[in-house]
Length: 269
Image (cartoon, rainbow, N blue to C red):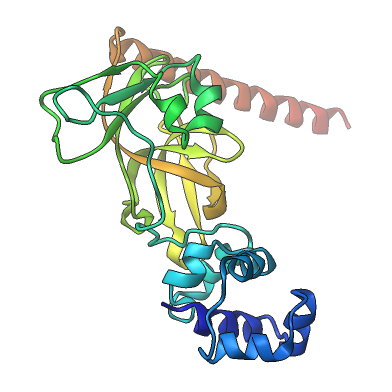
């Protein structure tokens, strides 16, 4: 257990004295000193108080050696992201099981996306989602299927169903690979990922469609990560490839028209 060393480490990391922390928590300095030096054990009330004060989950305060994680990971913790990047023991996935005791593949349709953004960790919500199975997928791994919308990932068509494998440890996210990510503000996104979590505490997300610009996603905005496995669509990708070429051609023509207008404007001056 790391509670004693962690509260001492966090106190010094923030430049606080024992008097400062004891006053803020309405306890005696000698009590705090006893916790830091392992002379006494905190009760539940004290654990809750320290958790609120440092804005870090009790599990993390007790089970994780905070002095051993990177500065970037600690920064994420202190900003409210209470599971550091290797928090495999703390990240819990709500799931359902079929009568044969194998895990289901839950389906998150377009209409269900808004509810999933808030109910993803609620077993009661997850159990009402439609479920199915795919015998060619490993029974040792967890999968979920999401319906995507829009043209940002063409040639994968709009309204396709993309299946992902659950990623527990985000440090294993592979740069250049597609992932389905549940975000804090934008809900479910399906993108190509560049993993910068350990160095910069963020992912860079890109679309297959070049008309869409890449954007960054901070680690504390990530709720779930699913590695792309396959997709199902009733449309042929070739149709969308033609549409994509048409859109690229239209964009090129529009840019040329803009340049011509700028040249004409300069000539008129």
